[in-house]
Amino acid sequence: MRMLHKILRTAMCLSLQLPLVAAVATSAEAVPLLSGFGGPTGYGLPQNCVHPNDDGSYAGPPPTTGFPAVAIPITDAFPTGLNFFGANYRTMYVNTNGNITFRGSLGTFTPMPFPVADQPMIAPWWADVDTRGGGQPMRNNICFHVERNRVVVTWNNVGYFSSHDDLQNDFQLILTTSNTCSTSGDFDVEFRYNRCQWTTGDASGGMGGFGGTPAQVGFDAGNRRNYVALPMSRTMSILDVCRTSNVPGGVPGLWRFQIRGGDVTTGCSGGGEACTVAGQIGACGQGVAVCDMMTTRCQQVNMPREERCNGNDDNCDGMIDEGTDLCPRNYVCDRGSCVERCSGELGCLPGRTCTDAGICVETACMGVECPAGQRCAGGSCVGICDGVTCPHAQICRAGRCVNPCEGVTCNAMEVCDPGPGPRAGTCVPGCQCTPCAEGQSCQPDGYCVADDCAGITCPTGTYCRGGVCRDSCETGPDTRLCPGGEVCQMGECVVAPMVRDSGTTTDASADSGTRVDSGVRDGSTTTDGSVRDTGMTADADDTPVVLPPSSRGCQCSTEGAQTGDLRWAASALALGAAFAVRRRRRRD
Image 1 (cartoon, rainbow, N blue to C red):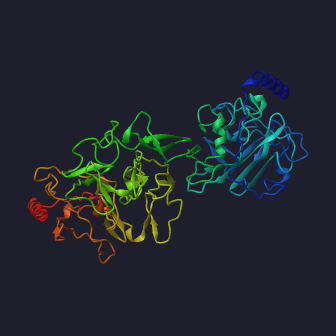
Image 2: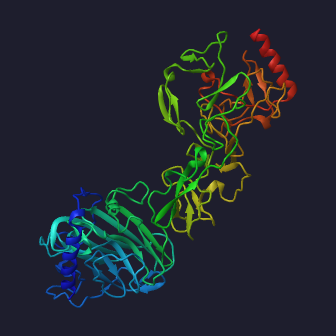
Image 3: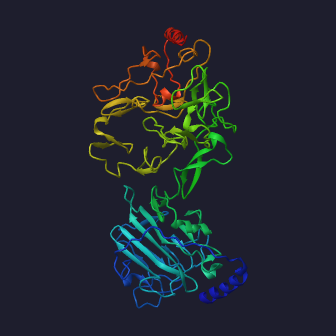
């Protein structure tokens, strides 16, 4: 009756959809499948392979009639069973149509949208698989392997209904014991896709392997409440599982998930990538993709703030670097930086040209227009984060130095990776689960700490290294710290204070007739190897000017002598006045 139903349904679908079907280029080859488990293909011994069938399940070793389905014990791999959405399972059913189930076999060929009643399921590719097209034992077969801590099920280059073998899908399901410390029954899931050439069987509204109702990928608790499905399920985009991965830096076709406490805890694709916040413009439109179960949401990075000279639309009004007071007197805002206004009298340094707007720019960058989020350097547009170094424990993202773990909530026994690296801002196993490296100790919060820093608590804006609390703003003499227009304070990049033309400043800087210095570190070292901040800076005649410790900045630039970048300081008013008079005399 089931076969008759499928034949009649196929005929009806073909008659209705003939004009709608178009040829689709879909072949994709990705990550290789695991092998070495015995049998002609290495995917499993003959007694562990499913007989050629349509809509069937594993029914025992050959010779088999294909009925009834046989439950496969998995306690050799997981002695206490698997905890899946609150229930414990010690057996599984391997079904032809691209899934395993736990309460009984499943022959449904058209993937119904999750949740499905009373059928706990893990589905790497739930669609109408048909292995009657021949090619066994080297292809068009389904085999499984059970060993200590692992179960592997392979759909080896399988065809689709009705007995079609012109297109093939090659994929694998791997269940392994959790590699993190966790409660009994927790496990990890891996989907591996080597070939994705079809999405739909004829009886599911398809023709030639496409159209109708495409495959579904994900997890279902079987209680009509809890489920997780890849967002491209039941659409043609499901073919993208061969071309993408949810593993940071993973090869295409590799997908991994964790089952903790019975729930799927990870599995989204694209977490940590830059994105655009819907309905926002300027800096407010900059976001980062945050994992939310199997999908991502774009989390806003910046809120509206005072406009400053940095090449961004900071106040989110659609305009970049607008305003006449973004820079001190005799400085102008140019491509995101405050630069000293040039004139016929002063001119520009070699390699730079004075424009009609009074801006000294790199001669190589004359006439170069860079898109938003980029700047010109050496005649080429570069990323806004290129050349920017962030304070300790921060990374450059969307043009800002941010704490990648801010707002990130991890599961029990996991911690947020602070970076740097591609996993920054993602949850990783804590040191209670993954041993620390030699010379490090595991702390109660799950992070590894160097032995000489264990038990040391440092004030805000500092961190421990070598047993000593160090300034998070500490950097080498030739390193630009923080994006343009920002300085490092208390371990964070903040907007640089503006100099006003009033003879004095509210930030204890010199008056506007001077070129303000930032207190560049002299680069000499202390006995412990750290960079010493002497608070020394130089006037135009190279006479040292001593700044008080509170005004020693964190920002320096290797381009300072060429670009006229602002150098901020907080010297006393009297000292600032003397500095200004001395400089004016030299100019005179």
